[in-house]
Length: 394
Image 1: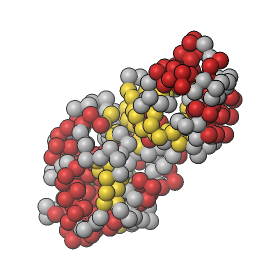
Image 2: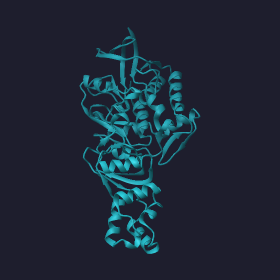
Image 3: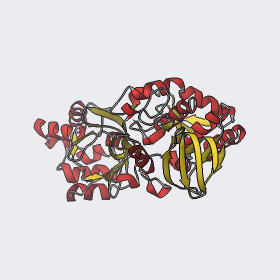
Image 4: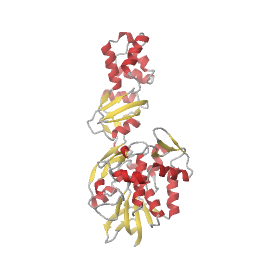
C-alpha cells in the first residue's frame, strides 16, 4: 500500500494552495481529484479572467454562523500575500472596480502559477482518481481509491461545495465530515440569480432580458448592496442581485432603488417646472434605456405630459422607482450559483489549523466549510487563506 505524509482531496483553489504550501515545508504531499483537470472553477471564474482576490478583503465580507472563525486564517495569509505570488509569476492584472482584481488575460494564468508552485515543491498530482472509502487508523487515515489503497498521516478535504455540478461538484466533503462526527449546517445556493414567475413581472423581465441598470441599491433582511442589476428571461441577475441572494430566504421581499444617485421627488418636481410638456417616459429614457423607460411607464405608470401630474402622483412615481418591491419565486439553484452557503459547522474545526476537533489529523479547507464570501474575489481569498493555514500543520 502506498503511504505518504499528506493526502489532499480536491485540486481546486484551496487544495492547490494547501498542497504547494505543505510541500514547500518539506511534507510529502499527494493531491487527488476525481476530475480530469485541476482547477476547473478557477478557469471559469470572473468570466474566464479569474477575480482572484479583493484589495479590501476583511472578515466582514464573509457569512458564517460563527463569524469570528475566518479572522485568524485571513490575517495570516491576506490579499497582499496572494498578490505577491501573482507578481512573482509576472501575471498582469488590473482592478476592475470595488477592489476586485482580475487577470489581464485568461484565468489559466492563476491555475498555471499554482501548478508551477506545486511542481516545484514536489507535489504529486493524481487526476481521475476517486475516493470510495476512508477509515481512521491508529495514526492517520487509510483511503480506498480507484487507483488502489493509500495511507496518510494527515488528510485534507478540499472538495468544495455543491455549486455548479457541471464542473464536478459533489457533496463528498459533507459525507466525510458526517462520517467523522461533524455537524452540517443547512446548505443552499449563494451568489445566484433570482427566478421570477409572477406573470406581469416575468413579462417585464423577459422583455428587458439583457438590459442592465448600472447603479441600483438592492436591500433585504437589513443588508444592502449598490451595484448593477441585469434583467434575464428567467428573472434578475447582476452583481447587486447575486450579493443579496446570500441574505435572501424564500418568501422575503426584495427592495430595489433603481436610481439611488438621484433625489427623485426633487428631480420630478424640477422636470415638471422646467419641461412641463415632456412626457414622463421621454424623461425616464434619459435615466434608463428607451425600451426600459417605455416598459416601466407601461407597467407602472400612466405616461403623460409632466404638467398633468398631481403632487400625489409624482410622489407615488418617486416611491415606485426608489423602492420597487418584489418577491422572487426562488433562485436558479446550484446550477448557476457561484458558491454554497452553509456546510461544515466551524465550531467543530480549529480556526488556527483547520483541523477537525472531532478527528485528529483530518482538516477541512475552502468552500466545504460554513464560510461564504461576498462577490468580488473574497471566496478565492478564503480558499488561499484556509489552504495556507492548514498547510502549516498537516
